[in-house]
Image 1: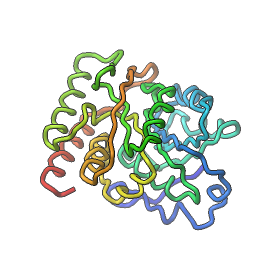
Image 2: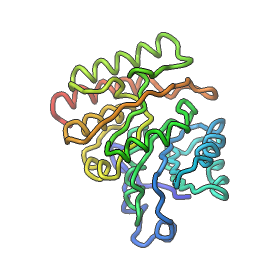
Image 3: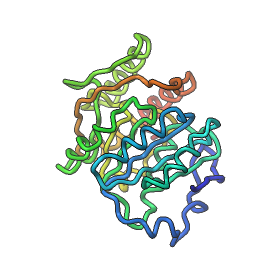
Image 4: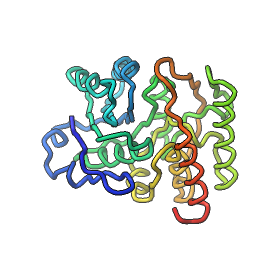
Length: 265
C-alpha cells in the first residue's frame, strides 16, 4: 500500500514524494496488458466482490485502487486481496474528488517502468459490469484511443435510476455535447478504455476535480484528434451504498463547463 500525504493547493498530488526512481514494487512488476483503475470512497460493501470478478477475467491485468481514506475500511479489504490478486493500492489523505482520483491514477500508472497498453476506468459500486472490460479492450486494440461504455447510444440502457437522476444525467450530457460540439451520445459515462498513447499526451491538460473529468477527457480526445468509439452497455444503479453525486459536484461540473467554454482550460 502507498499513502499520499502531500497534496498541493487545488487538490493535485505531489508525485515527486510518492514515486521515487527505482521503487522496488513498480520495478518488479511483469508488464500487464491493462490496468483497471478503481477510485473508491466508502465502497466496503462492493470492493471485495468487484475485485474478485475483475480478477477472474482472462486478461493480463493490474488493478489500481485509489482510495480517499474511506472510513468504512475499503482500503483494508483491497489490501487483504493483494495476497491473491495483482493489486496496487494508493491511499490519499481525504476525499479529493473523482477527477483527481483518475488523474492521480493515470500518473501512478505512467510512473511504472512498463506501463500497460490500456487503462480502464470504472465505478467501484458495481454500476458497471466487469464483463464489459474485454469488449472495450477489443475496440482499443482495433485502434481507438478512447472507448466509452455508453448508456445512450443504440443498445445502451439504464436500470434502477429514478426520474431525477436520469434527468440530471441527460441534461449534463446535453449541455456538454451542445457547448463543445461533441460527437458522442454519452460523454459522462465512467466506464472507459484509454490507450496509453492518449493518456501520455493529455495528462498535462487535465484539470478537473470531480465528475467533469469524464467530459474533459472526451473534449481533449476530440480536440487533439484521438479516435473515439462508443459501445452500448447496461448501467445498473448501485446495489450497496449511496450515490456520491452532491450539489457541490454539480456546481463543480457547471464551473468546469463555463471555464472550458471561455478557454481558461
